[in-house]
Picture 1 (cartoon, rainbow, N blue to C red):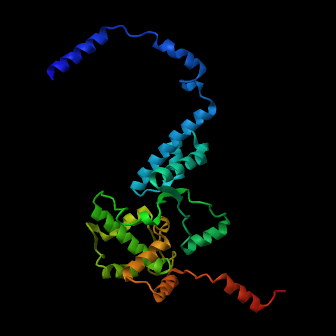
Picture 2: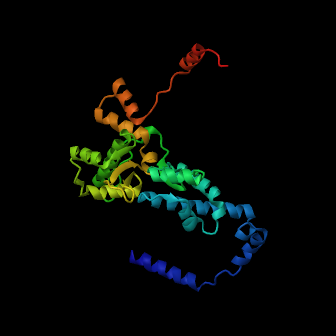
Picture 3: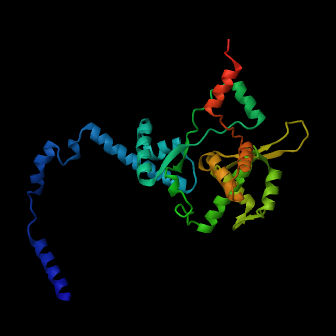
Length: 303
């Protein structure tokens, strides 16, 4: 073994003593002039495609890092931290990143809904301003594009950070709270929420942290919105606290997630449960097209 190592060292020293070929650069010069091996020979379209591909990869990394901490991926953040002075190419880079996310990661960037005007004061201000509603919120999250067969709990396991048990408990808790808010017409008083948590033995602690801390974390992540309304100045009264469904919950959980959780809790789904569930969620059953046609014929022609 030592003889082989010494022999390799001798060969390396002999190679160092040999003169290095000086014609290597000259050998590639004709190709560089023609434009085969040099970036200078690339046309403008090829340069742009390569630059766009690098920016798209950078956007994918940025989106994954934001989603890991459940931070909304905002349009301004993409322009500042990814695009830089290429802000005008946002849509082109965004579409390329979407293709990479779907093809490699099985995800896509989904825009969060615009926050609704909840309080009476906000609604009055919106009516006075006569401003046009925003087309989008400018904030995104990553959602799965995998088929339903690959979305089982055995495949999509909770994150191991901080621990799998803590992450699973947090997911179960915010899904439960969001479902309770949604089943109460999208607005749940704080007193009623506390009664629900007391029944679940979660009014004080959730896993290893206080319940209040977990609720604040849910607010920060966008699963719920806490609304505190105080009486107008000069009027007496107590402040009211209500909980509403947050933008992340609408995209990540949705009505399908709430209905799935209720079915899982009750174990079996029957017609009565489905009817009550749809009534609580405000889902109207669509009438068959033939029934609508018959009703129209019975009412007679309109004049």
